[in-house]
Length: 271
Image (cartoon, rainbow, N blue to C red):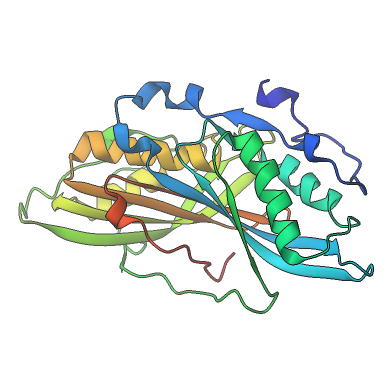
């Protein structure tokens, strides 16, 4: 099924009974056709924070939690966000004998739709810490050229400094649009990089160029990863975006060329 057949952007009744069939898969394959030769595009995870989780315990008392879902980048499908919200709503009035039984049910349902092993970690509502970004902020730089749609040719090496090394840059200026509803998506993007030094201004110009781009969070991060990998040819690369919350969910895709560079998942203040 195409995403146009999903519930995204449509008026919807919120279910009050358990409905795992509401989950809607979106194949990763079509968006990856342009960079299928970038092997590392399938290395990493999509972390989701679910802020509206509730179910009933054995005696009918509501339980609440914040969830962190980990969806492997190697999964055949991603899960459409509105369908995920509706799915969790359908659990609000469902009885589970234990928290572990709730987790097991969710993991089974999401794994079936993603066609890969999906995990769920639950936190108490005041337990999930807010982190501060680590690395070098590039948001105060002034790029030489700005565009409104992604252009890999904006990316350049630092011609004045050919020294090789490892850096981590970040920017809060990431903005893109949902390809179905046109709603803006905001986020912070982290780029960890080892190789010939990139031009920081060019990296910022490239990030800003997503401002009118239509793409799902996961697709935007994969395009960033592929463009930087092919254009600048680093030895190692990580691209990790922490998007702000919408509909009780935030999505945090991460792609790495080396699995030893997988970061720990974080939550920033805007989320």
